[in-house]
Amino acid sequence: MKPTLDSRQLHAFAALARRGSFTLAAKDLFLTQSAVSHAIKALEEDVGCRLLDRVGRRVLLTQAGEQFLRHTEKILREMESARAGLENLTKWGHGRLRVGASTTACQHILPTVLREFRQSYPKCVIRIEPGDHGQQLDLLRGGHIDLAIVLEPPGQNLAEFTFVPLFQDELRFVVAPQHAWAKSGRVPREAIEAETLVLYNKSSQTFRLVNEYFREEKIALSNVIELGSMEAIKELVKIGIGAGVLAVWIARNELETGSLVSLPLGPRKLRRRWGVAHLKGRRLALGEETFVSLCVSACELLGLKSPHAAA
Image (cartoon, rainbow, N blue to C red; front, side, top):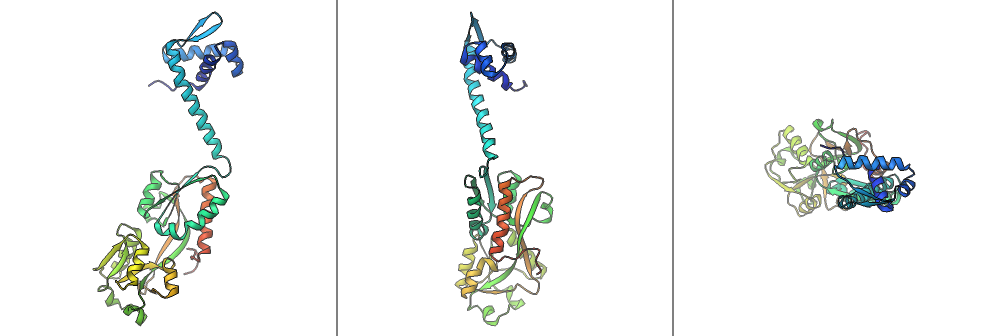
């Protein structure tokens, strides 16, 4: 396989084709005529054909030269475009930011963060990829997103990612006020297996955590309704179809208005850690570091407990 074309030779060829004179081309390029001549000779040897004819003091393109000039001009335009793009990235507020987040994070956390981020980086192109925990880790691995707001990756994935903790929450039962558990203020252990549980979809990290929790408690989940939306879970529970399992902050409005009641899963708490993940070893750009800092601030404003705070 032949090496790629030398950009200096391409510049010399384009200048010579444009000016029709070694003297003028050398002047434009701030080179000697000899240097331009050597560059053209090396280029012709590289491509294996004659590109120019000398007619007196004039330089004319051969048929091959005319064809090669079209490619040369395109290559040089692309090179200039690439340079301009990189220069834009170094300017304050330019660049791009690709963020992955669950629908819950998109609804509750991202609006505040993106509003603040846009003020600091008004020209940054932002793309949001909604999806569950597993999807976000796959997108990070494939280089399709830069950052992801996710639950802490399982132990086997920790070697791949850097995880910046944001907050810790607790999963609890939520039921309608007329539910027997709400009226008694307790959840009888023996009643859990018989109850319809409304859970987030089975492919999610949250479902795996809930399933593992009850398995360790020796409680079988025999009657489960699976939904792909936290909002849909709340609405189903409100009309009395079973008990949901949610974090308090996701149902804060409903709990404050009394349309839902929160109860513990059991004597042992089921906690999750949320944070921002990126590929380990990847150096974050200034805009990405700013985004992470804004996520931390937004979670504090929402009253979400830091994972480092006492339980």
